[in-house]
Image (tube, rainbow over all chains, first blue to last red; front, side):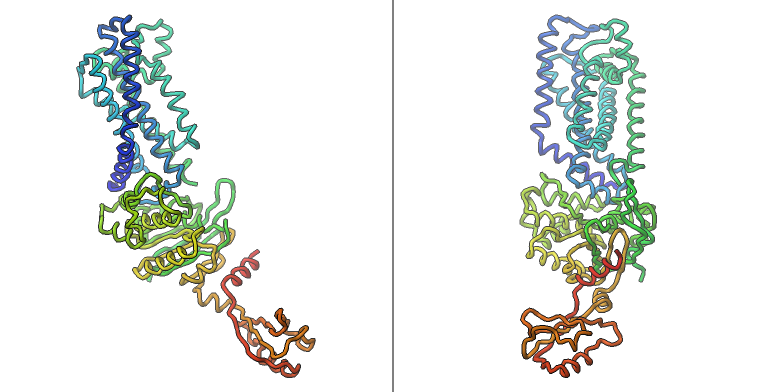
Length: 253
Length: 308
């Protein structure tokens, strides 16, 4: 294992994060505050509580997940797309490192940044609502597993993308709708039966449900199922990445 | 001594069926400067890319310092520094950080003394904290070289190092290459400037349409394939070449005072003695004479013509 190379990529990527720290943090924090104002204050005033939890607190795990997914996908896809775009990928390909090491470096940095921002949002939300975290270790576990899985997805998108438009396509068209429809702002028990069934097909539901369970001990789906779903997604992404590198798809002629 | 790079029957056919490399075999000795010469699209960059791991070869075997580039790629690649043809460089990063990054990628621990040495050798030390995008084109190219040298490679690939570079910088680059050779680094450079190959290389390989047409010591190549030109400067100007001298295919210079005779140095008889005798018979007196070795450029063009 070429640990020096992994470290070099990780440090290089994180230094970009810290160079653009203000914009990296300000915009997700601002949008979270807006969600709190709109959903918490305006709508939350009419919905007293969901499953015994104040509405303002109920949406916190969903909001954190929304940012975590967007951040991990965007960071990782941009992280590997940019060297491809400016041509510096030649250096990664000619270095004595395996593809696994390249993935660990980029995905590790993308997940780290996403978790950092998620924790900042968690801290911000304590200014608006009283929060309890029943299972802090599981909470961190879900953060970690989700961030890594979706950073892997982002990495795949970054390899696949042929333009900046394509790079933004998946987060915009797929991730955001799935998060909104995955029970970030409501419990699926509030939906008619038919739509409950449809929502169960949304993989993000299992993430948010499990994550919310770590906070409040309340879940839409059994927590074991949530863990299984995230793990399955992780394995799927790893499989795709393994295939990409084995065939040199979009990287090596 | 075993070659530091050994290429055997290397072939590369792209997905579209385009043959970029066709059965290339080549040995490169440690410490030499090899220039790969060829027109654009000849396969020079593909050859380098295949050795460095950027392109998957279709066939053939390449070893670097005895390590196979596929099965033992870590050991093989750690010997190599690559300076690509295009200036591909992280625009927002600082010079010293990009250079350190490259060292890390090659698995070497941080070594500020070595990075300082490399940046100083490339006159980049004063610019170490500048962002890459603030540098001039020539400086960026030097940053690429610094990156390639950051991990102390034994072999350096320079793909078109002086393309689009002004004359002064080109001279600097040549000086640098000589310096590196003196340090024991093996250098493989591609160029389509014949002047460059002639100036720097120990050996020259000529590539066209994916085939390695020949590899030869530079001096030998010029000698073996060279034709020489004999210029005879006459006392009195002529209107045309006398018909008595027709068999020599002489050309008359514009001023009418120079006769130009081309001959093959490899031929058994160069015909010079007879020409001089016939000149005297024709009543022409020679004031001075000069011979010129044909340049690599002519040799190169002749070879390409023969291959076509």
